[in-house]
Length: 508
Image 1 (cartoon, one colour):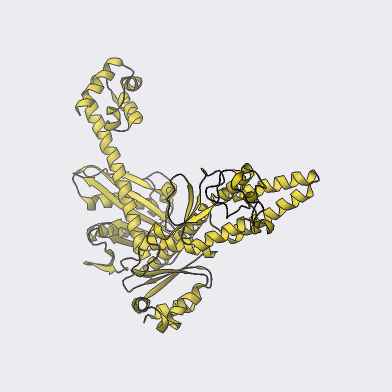
Image 2 (spheres, rainbow, N blue to C red; image 1 turned 45 degrees about the vertical axis):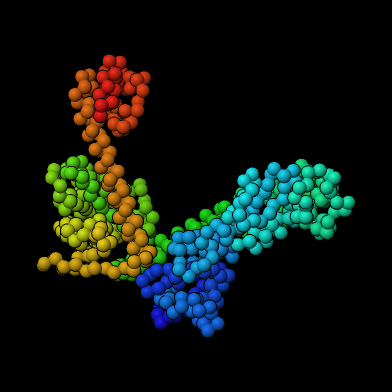
């Protein structure tokens, strides 16, 4: 580990709970770990190097970069670690690579007296399972806390089905408030199952509803002068609030951790990209990406997708039906699309209707293609005086290489080198793929519409108005083929024409 960057990052590492990722010089993930205190943990790799396992020493020797992701609790760190390991499949991680290392909370409702159990495998097909959770102890910790609110006996015989199996006296846990007394038949089966349902609801993420219900009952008991029951519920509310604030295990927690991770990755990707392109950040960094879909020269289309702060903003997407060229010429088509878009920024608004997407200048333009497409785009930006205010890059399809123009007489290009697995490259590829998907989708719509029109042209009684109704109702030839006689007649409004149309469609 000779990288000066790593040394500086270790000194500035956060002291929060979270995860850390060691990477090699190619940007490949070597190891994902979690910690209650990230700074202490990552620095221990250096301070205790000689005492490390030889494999971990080798990992440290290969490490050329380190990244940190902070969360609120230790359990959030555990679940985030699991998701990162699943995503990157690091070479030096040996645990949590499959579900055998997870823990599940199991409740067998077919048992008359069910109790929650922590298991490694889902063997009982009749039981309900909640999880998975990366480690056993945090789930045990939650259950132990919940028993103060929903007491149950964990010493019940597994085959218990009647009061004949009950003990003469309740167990020790009954006297400290962790057992309901079910082991001695002090409460009914219904009351016992109600407590277990409370535990289930907590693990299903319904804890806030439960707290509200307890408070309502507490108020009711107080009004009825049943102060002992009201005090009991007050204590349960306090215990539930403690578990909620300090131990997050419900399904929402996993989503919160993932949302935070995705946000961190987007921010990291933008930071890497801006640094590499030497661009200034803005309050809402807007990236536009353009692609052309052109198959055999027919129904050529262009697409513009927009990402703001690393997230797609589909309300700003735009599609273009190519107007001026009938032969396949992707470079000319790219010029047309960019001309129609950039005229708006130059002050000539006659090219496209006034809309929000065109009124906001992008902070970066990406074109899907190599040096030819990049040259076409550059010439249009230069023509409208935008070359100095709107940065431009191209992503070559074959080698996934990124270029930008550095000179025009003749054209010279700079290759922008991003690590193979850098978040910045992932972001650019995702934007490019989205532009391609959007262009292809529009192309297919136009092609399908053209198919419908060409088929319908030879059918007597089918005019332009009927064609329009058919297209609006079915959208494609395939959908029209599946229509029933009644459905087709309702659109065409003529039985004979409807039958003729269905007959023709069957031959297609």
